[in-house]
Image (cartoon, rainbow, N blue to C red; front, side, top):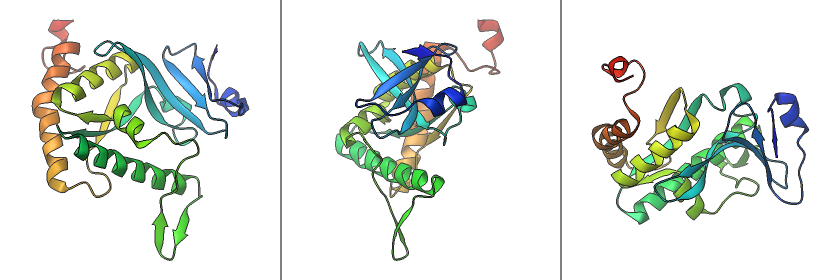
Length: 204
């Protein structure tokens, strides 16, 4: 189902027995997904040519992410590692941080004494799915995911979060160094330098 997404239209979309998505006719790829419990999430659907599958890039819950910014800024948790175990730990930290942030925004926080408790989202995907959806993996994997996502969403800005939860500082620094030193050159070879970068005008 497709329609021009507006705030009024999004507010009108009620829950169905099964999750459904409405595509934005004015922004190809952008979807608003509605769960059976009425939770609404912006996402981009795109075909990742590297693996030959359609993937979903979750942008955030509505109205935490307003419609006006849904296709402008992409905020991504990122962790570069060759270890599946380490990657899953990062995915768990990212899930923890997302839970807390969302509960605070919605004023639905749960406290145990003086400790803020992370509460699962309604219809929250399993950790393995979160791991696969985030920018987690070795240099080649993260570069391929990033090229596919940028090509699908055409964002104005991409913001990365490397230090989430109890992610070790050294691991976060290593990911930042690899992102700049090895992932960024691969992405630019595939997509070209960013707008405003030296040589972009000549390349165009």
